Image (cartoon, rainbow, N blue to C red):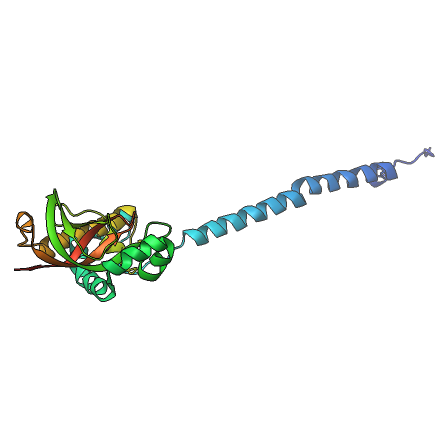
Length: 246
């Protein structure tokens, strides 16, 4: 006897998903996709980081001449003050001689209007005091250490004139008076200062060699040099030429 009931096939046994269940699975898939995709804010931050890194790389990239020192320490070692002084003093001295203003003209101008006289006759570095190339004729007076007093006719009463005669030569008047030596020519402040000292050393060995300071009192002396202005009552010259009349 044949049974009236029939066996369902496996395909028929799997029921179709309900609309609600299908929607839940689609929402879960979208959630996974969103979770794995960076937000706009995150992408913007990432792009910004890339830009900063590339900019830093660009700033760190420096063109360097093949003969330039590879490091800061090497650059400092390449600056030889003695060599600089020997090479530069022969250039500076003629400029000072060529542009020298008679001290008897300059001091009254400084007393009348220091700023105007500075702009007309001097040079300065930034806001530092003006330095001037000058010439003067006078008579040797008292010696005070490395300074020789000079009696000069035609100057306002009370004006003191001193000439550095060594052995110590100080200041940066020679470096600053021409306006041709710039801070940017050097690696740092130390080298810039050493440049001034190197020029002073050339004065001692080139200009004042053979000068006997103790024997200058009462002698007629002609000086071309430079000084840095602090007050018109006191002028301290660093010479590039120093001539004594027998």
